[in-house]
Amino acid sequence: MAAGTGPGITYSVPGEITVGKEMQRGFINDNILHSPEHGDIHYSSYIPEAYDGTKSYALFVTLPGWEGLYFQGVGANMVEDFGVEAIQYNDEMIVLSTQLNDWGETSADQAIALTEFFLAHYNIDPEKVYLHGYSGGGETGSLVMAKRPELYTAFLCCATQWDGNMTSLAEARTPVYMVTGENDSYYGSKPLKDAYEKLYDLYLTEGLTEREIDSLLILDIKEEQYFTARGFTDQHMGGQAFAKDESIMGWLFGEH
Image (tube, rainbow, N blue to C red; front, side):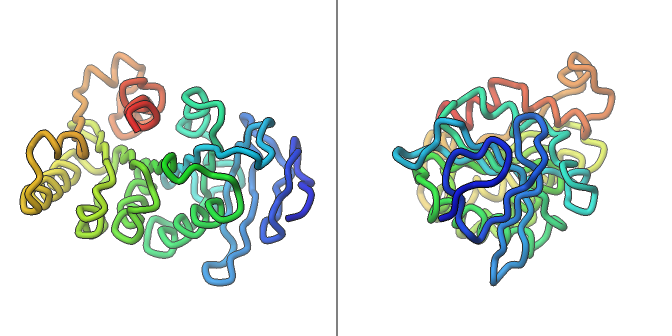
């Protein structure tokens, strides 16, 4: 661990990390985790000033959509509100907003590597490790759930489709909240409805009761009025409103 050199850094930073130099919305942009196995992993970070490693903190990893990927420019991920809004739910939480390169297997492996690195090098409460994905980031998150669901306390899956295998997720029983618009302009609502039904059936096969399943799996389909009331005419872009919905974000950080 070396002394941090980035803006607002008051704690030690592992040598594998290059700290970014630019602040945006309270986050340090373009930190880089240099992973021997997975290459350079770019992300923005919020680490509370009080963090000094003496007590455990929660960890929230958010995977932005296509417009927030690294090729869109440093800090493009910060147009999304999920990371910023998450801070309001726990003032003892580290928040990482990734800037990966796509929404496929490589990015899923990088998201896992970033999570594992923080669990290994920061004082993180393993019972409070949250994952979120919006749009393409939701696809990546579903692949993460196929690979390492046991790393996470809960997964919030927004305005997207499910790409990952569900067998490991069903075994790990990581709670999942799926939310999208009935007429999402990019994906529609059918992909998440199908994913919900498939995972529900897996749980039934494992002998879980409906009540037990309902505690692990939620499907929330929003009608047009939900979006228009919040100033959105496009339901996919309107998925950004989920970040400011206390019933959704509260499920992630309150119930879990």
